[in-house]
Length: 419
Image (tube, rainbow, N blue to C red; front, top):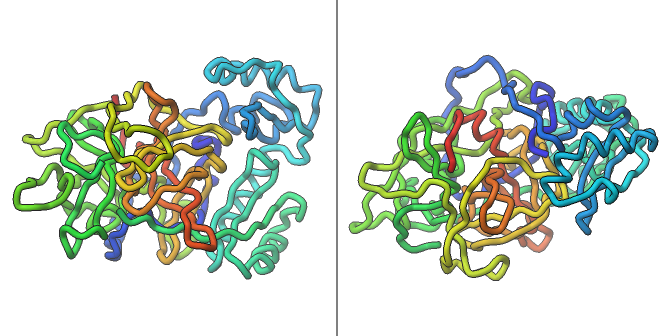
């Protein structure tokens, strides 16, 4: 769940590669705009922090592969308490309390959060680390590492005093950046292809997707990935074109907000951190755009990029482990997948950048989908975040993607009106 941890406890994140293809180095960080990485984020009815406060001995909550709600409890007699705490979530998902399955929790959520914070701080500064997660579905701290580094990571965790049984160390591939719907569309909506110059205009290296349109202090804008700018972090007035920069395609927008990645305040030593890979670009006066619209293709998971209507954003929210979310990107179109991890701290492969509290989805985006909107629903949808990274299997096939939740995006970019 994207808002589950007290963010002052977040430290380092997963080793991830950004989903676009701007290969330029980010600009140096500027002085902090705020004193720390500690935003005020309201808990939701299904986030672990809220549930831990309401349910004694709570150890995690998720939806299993069949969509059945599952809760970990140290004392099964607290089932009725759990049912009451989860009642709003059940109503919103069309579930009933009788469907709730109770599993025995070996650890409560406060323990998992404490060990998660300790492991993040130490593990993510070590080469070969990929992610650290307080995992709702296993009642354990799960650490993803590259092949051949598991023993070293286990040694670090042991020195921290974290019980061996509380940690699962699993080998995984690093999160890879994704490079690059594709026609000129007006008014501009979420999910469309955009092109930004970089050092070489009109090449696929610098193609991304629009996430969603937004108003910020009355300014018409779109949100895309921070790495879909000429330099990740810091504003250098990146110009954007849709679909490509050509002699007949005028600029549609200019980058206006992309906060510098900062050090300190829980950021691992030698790293620069933020809560999202997101940037905002303001539309030109001549560009028409539709607030609350995302392009919809002819079908999910079929590779189509042919537009067939639109999704209507009717709310902003978060997603739980086990829930199905969708995304629309210029390369792979509309795809769906299940959320597998929430509020994961992530390290960007090959850089000094870390992200706090990101979500992971089992789905297959491809280069060019960076910046794509992530949402729940199939017609009227709830906007949950912005896609920016992916993890490939040993054959080089992207099997999962990473997105920044709305809470992190608005922490970095400020409050946004999205519908």
